[in-house]
Length: 168
Image (tube, rainbow, N blue to C red; front, side, top):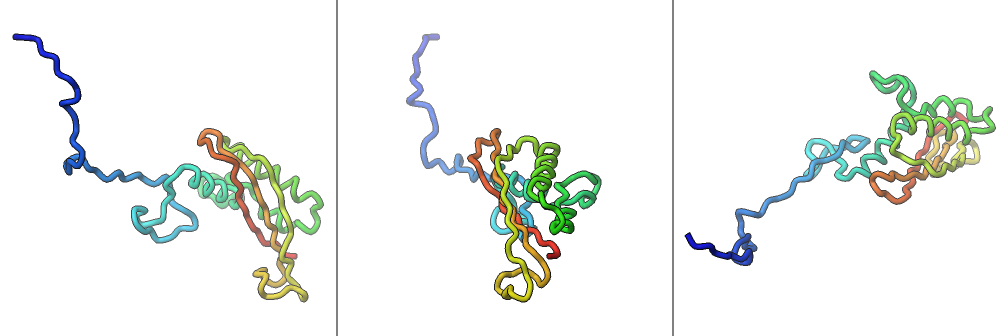
């Protein structure tokens, strides 16, 4: 049998071949919270389709969860609600809140790097507060802004804003 040289230019896939067209269906990373009915490719519930948005959702849930609220994991969460009941008597709210958030993130989401924290006590309701501020009567809103990044996902610095209410 004689030896033949065949070039790769004559072999390959022709463009437009319908047998080769396939829709790529990327699976979701997790369910978005708060839970919503799914649309499009999400399925029954709305889903996150990238890791950064899923991590942000998980971080928000970690910060808003208090000890004892997570079934089977009593110590999960930043446990900030107990601070909101004592906010009028605590002078160093920011320091205690930052420490609790850092401890929770270090334990449950060590891949997140926290960079800064700021808070303000806005929307104090009372006789002078109007109904348009959205704060229930006799309550104070604590607005927290936490900046973070996720090095393994090569995400730029992001910020998450959380509001909590306390009896004012």
